[in-house]
Image (cartoon, rainbow, N blue to C red; front, side, top):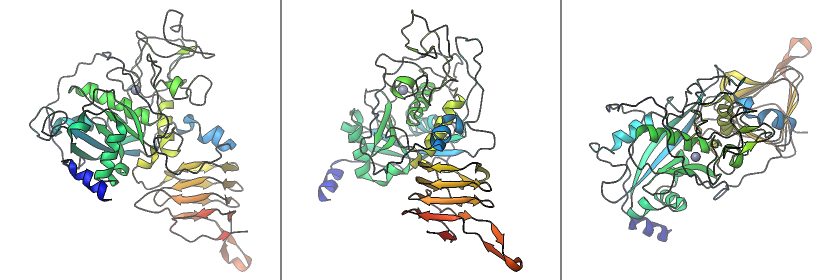
Length: 458
Ligand SMILES: [Zn+2]
């Protein structure tokens, strides 16, 4: 421990604690032209294997319910009444020793905090990260007209901005060194929100990973708010498991080459890549995607998709929205777990997930809604179900819940879930009693619930 402390104090570090939600400020908006200018496509570095995986129990993920329903990004396409899920993001800025570089602590400087906050404001709290623009593409394919949804039901919230003055780390292109320094400074900062780390390294911005969780490490070389926000939306998109809609020279980070979304896979974005696209011809360097005969977007055939390389990239397709929401439910993101950074939320009681037929849940899911099991239906849990604050599982008449070596628990830090509601049944002489419809067997557990439940353990 002493060694850690010593190395910590070798560096002079300053931490500025900002509460972004409480302070409003004004900064004259720069004129932004509406043309959809192309920017050079970044050369992404991706580490798709976990750096330091947490102890994760492996779940079967083989049930029909998983394969045909809960694994499908289409299942999560948001509807009007859905609850907004918030991803917490914590910003870590590495700086040189003096007040130079980006970002500076002197508010009067061009690169000072107001500029940083202004930029972050545009992609948080229900702004560009949440609301999609309509699709706009430079090419047309007959019959291809994806549904437009404006509200993706995901937003981002900045928890804090921390500054670290360190001339070596300011320029280093080594994520692990940056994360380790943050962790040594205050280990709780790593779990506070998805780390969004800025320094002045000439390396490209990229998806990263620390202790099995997603993170983004980037530099912004010039203050250009349009570029900055498009770039950050794109990089955070990677953390949700979204790949590029274009293919770059090294193939790194593209949707079907690196994010398992090729034609025929469950993650294929049929609402981004038109099938039988006449633009996919032999003259192009874009790989085609048989048998769909779709291709990635390469200049001049591009769209304003959020994962394109263009400025003003603000179109999110319904399936991409579904994938973002799925990422907040399932831990299935190649070592880039993101759902642990979900903001605590009260379970949605109005829009419960309704189970109409017998289902086996052999997977690990984080819930934001109540669950209703319809009459006569059995829900069997061999995986893990984590409920939101005051969440309920309601069993209707004759419905059954079996926790077979599985677990039902709560995931929010600030409150537990309620428990399982079972129907009252009439007994002789009109006496009502609670039916025992919950079975917990083979080492199954029910944790963090607020109420006692009638449980059969045989
Ligand atoms: Zn990228």
